[in-house]
Amino acid sequence: MSSVSAKIDCGRYVGLITRLMPSTVTLEGAEVHMVTECDRDFPVGEYLVIESGDTKYLARVSESRVEDIYSIAKTPVLSLEQELAMGVKYIPRFIGLELISECQGNECRPPSTPPRIHSPVRIPSEGEVSEMLSLPRDGVLLGTLALPSGAEVLGNEVRLPISALRHHVLVVGTTGSGKTTLLKNMALELVRGWGKATVIALDTVGHYHHLVMNGVDTKVLTPVTRGMLRRAVGRYGNAVRGFVKYLVVGYVNTAFRNFGIDIRRVRVRCKCAKSRKSGSVIIRSVLIEFLEPRLNAKVELIPWALRTGDVLYRVHEVTGMLTEQARMFYRRVINEIRRRSGGELTFRGMFEFLTSPSNVSVRDRALLNYEVIARDLGIHTSTLENIIRTILAIDESGIVDVEEGGVKVVEPNYGDILSPGYVIVHLAGVGPMVQRMVVYRVLDRVYSFMGPEHLRDRERFAVVLIDEAHLFFPQARSEDEKGMLELHLTKLTRLGRGRGIAVVFATHMPDDLNDAVLQLTNTKIILRSEEKVLERLGVPSTERRFLATAVAGLAHASSFAYRYPIYVRIKPAAYHVG
Image (tube, rainbow, N blue to C red; front, side, top):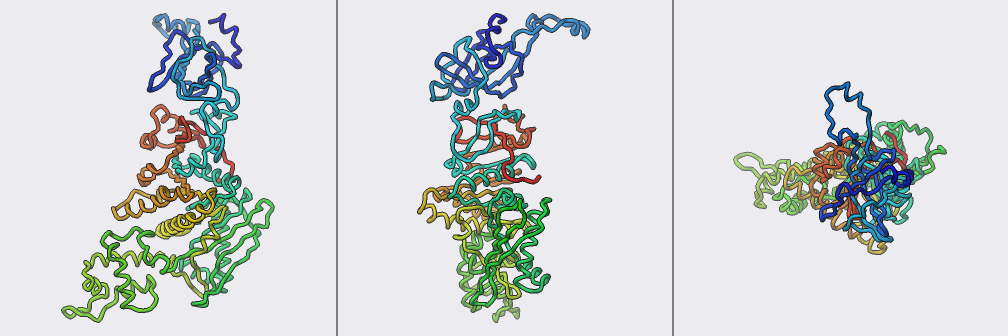
């Protein structure tokens, strides 16, 4: 080997395919071995290129063996002193290589033949690995191709095509592994680079507002409950000005000051309208301009609440609380309440009516109205009680029929909100019941809006980023809830794809995530996770030990858009705290 190695420039060529071990290509895989005397490390996962005549092979280091000549000769060691006294005499190193692709010209395919014996092996040139892996050249930038150690393969970008994005993505990783960083990077690139994209981020913590620091104008859907409105009016006196101040101060504190971003000066403008019916002032939006040089973007706060009429016949879609029996009779029950009670229906009014005494008595006891309705319609009282519990839960959420002190909050115009740009559904500060009601309703409106929108312009699309996805699409606790969740998932993913809707689900608790999400996401990006999680997600055992202890920002990506699973190094491009 010494005479051959003298002819090899170890800065470029690092070894030869050896004849001492077989080169094997089968239907299940391909493996060859390299012999080298170059004084460098060959970390597992490193990419190398084999030149064999007109054919190039991309290979990945799968095994690295360092042996002393005495081990080859099986020379016995009788003591530690003898071990240390025997000088180490290295033989040429053998490196196991997994063949990844076989390329002739610009055409690359899975290996079908082994390279020739003594074919030289070299370091790839810049961008060569991406070409030989046939990685997409267009799409959303995820990061840089990487090794299992986290080291970057410089000059090799990893992009996810929009076509693959629209087949939906699952991002999994423990807290601090880089999930939020990846999603924010994607949001920033989509908003800046894809002018016909609407990006909607469901934010339960407050991380996604910081794209304002990158100069991104942002619309923020802000759920408002009756309790919040009552506190605002009580605290600041003047109803309209007090509510606007309450919104702005609460938003700045939650989205910026709580993360150490000191915001001192803002200019506020309010868009209002007067309700013809009640005379109350409807707050349409509150525009915030930051009077600081580092913040050159605007935020539009859009108060959000429901009216009974918006969801009266769709309560199961926003709560999942009705049993199958209750769903069958729900509309008849509501119509009966309307007929018997008269006037406009509200959830509070319906609950009070159903639980009030009727004019009908049995055995000297006045039946409650729901008992009379159950009797007259031939429905079991337990079914009516389920409907009552659902009505009460919606009312007590406080997100329906929000009006206080001459101020009213309603559902906004989604056509204005969902135009191309960046939208946050701000879920911090409200309870789980409200969060889920808001999410299910907003996603339903996205689905409805994008149908005609995408039909008019096939380049229009919407990307929904669902961080903490297990909160909104959990493992169902009952068959009724399972049916509701799968209805939303089917609409949003399978049917939504034809409307230009892409969904990115992210979670650190995949065991708590609805199983349908795993089936519906065709791209999976896995960051640092526990061994059992990696196994459940189908990560090969050969990769699990790297991902179980991976550095933050290292991800294992598999997709129909990539011929082979790859590692990606993700670095913050969007402003990020934490």
